[in-house]
Length: 564
Ligand code: NOJ
Ligand code: CA
Image (cartoon, rainbow, N blue to C red):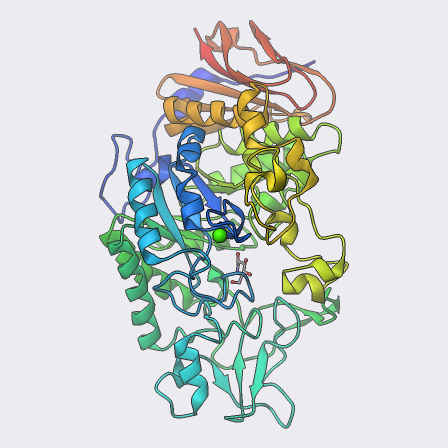
């Protein structure tokens, strides 16, 4: 049994003030000073894998539209759609060949408008993925850029002479393997690509590029979208002198010497570009979410911008680096993000990383642990972004054979890096063939776990992961403390249970998360702090409370309202 002192009466007065975030945009604040994106729950959809309406094996916009009732019922306020623009699909849409159209495999602009209208009726906002760093090599800008050294778009990309015959301009290596430079014999120069060679980097130093890209966002805002998730923000600029990156000992999974991406990521010029994008966003009361792989909170702070004039929601990937159920490590990370200069953004999974089910699961209590993780990121102070399938406990299922791999880097990196197919498998709607995702052969196989983890079955089961997600999201939307309250860690020395309060005015909700495989009984000393007990709001694993005490089964959750 562990004991704890929470000193709540003192802390109420200290923490009941609610920070005014995002002061640069004074629109649409509620009484607490919060904007819509601070209360919204976001849900990431990988369109290829969500729902296939025309049975060609690939998910599409009409498929997404057909699932809006499900999303509403789940408690989602905004969906972020990963790229559905025309693309050769080398990087499954992150190689865009036209920012202002829809790839026919996903539908048409008319389908998009229908989806937007239907989403609006459901009270669900649309967030698009904006691939700012690079285009496809098939984009008309690059086709022209490549055509001659004097073409109109030559300077829209980064072209340089090699150091000598067969020698690229510097030592930079691509995050997907090999040099970042590809030689083009037609014009006898190299172009720069941080990702695949089919993804040439745009030259954001060129004002024409900036204006064109700002214009793209304006065009979509006018079409009704509510914001963008900006792809690969860290890589938008490179050192103008192309200095060699420092080399580290060892080799990457692709066989390249390891290096610190000092001169081709996180360059200071990024911020000016972000401020420009934000200016357009503010005209439409939109939101900018960032794919920001920061090393620490200081770097994350830079992305909020001075006076919060850059990204409203830079994702805190440091949180995903806590890869074990360690209360101490989560405490540290949550404290860090709460000290940040902007509003926290929580993700635990996405289309690039192994799903949380596998990262935290112990192979025995995975469903309980999935609920535990849900209770964590959905009750923290900040905006959560759910990845599709997390709510039913989808498991990462990587290809078994190299020849089945779809993600190119999974072939280069095989078998150490099997690519990202495993976290992109089709959504598991029911137990029918192909999990109700398609009637054709799906582009990626449906994992066997569709038989045990699917929407239809879990909707019927009050003890399912899905039912718990729904319960949590409902609570989040209705409970003032969870919506607007400050975060206050308690019982900070407990090695097994992560406990915190969400405090709003003179009310508090207690969240207790047992991150261990053994039962725990905790004394919160409620009486001494002016409370009679904690009344359960949402629990798992037969958790209960009595007076000062909360009892938790292995990996169990207790969320309770403190009552006087
Ligand atoms: C990040 C995206 O999430 C990932 O899927 C993609 O491969 C790279 N950026 C390049 O666009
Ligand atoms: Ca389809």
